Amino acid sequence: MSKKIINTTNAPAAIGPYSQAIEVNGTLYISGQVPIVPATGKVIEGDITAQTEQVMKNIEAILSEAGYSFKDVIKSTCLLSDMANFKAMNEVYGKYYNENPPARAAFAVKELPLGVMVEIETIAIK
Image (cartoon, rainbow, N blue to C red; front, top):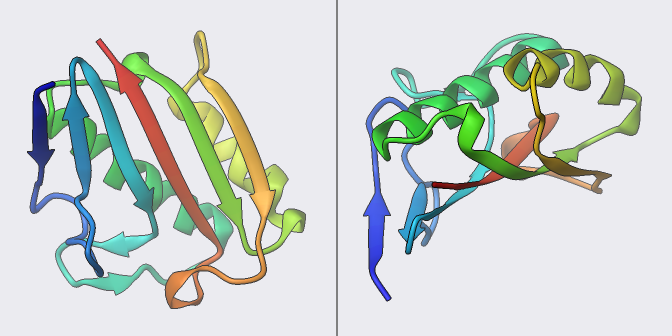
């Protein structure tokens, strides 16, 4: 097994004992991304649309650092603070997966880190 830690300054630094992503044997596991702006380390201002857009930019930065793209994503798990935000989150999410979208699950959870509205974890394969 070949385990590689993926880290980029173009995505938020880990806020706990975890890596941004781990690549093992051609599979990339990206930790749940929240809408933190990497340059400031702060949660982006705005609604669920703005937060989802930032999350997707963070995922894109990690995919890129590891040599992957959204076309390589096979599974996403979307965590929402409120299922009422599902439609708006889905509209932003869909722009990144407009062709052959990955498998996905979406859940409402009681609370997310830093009080954010959305967190998305991602698995990609080559």
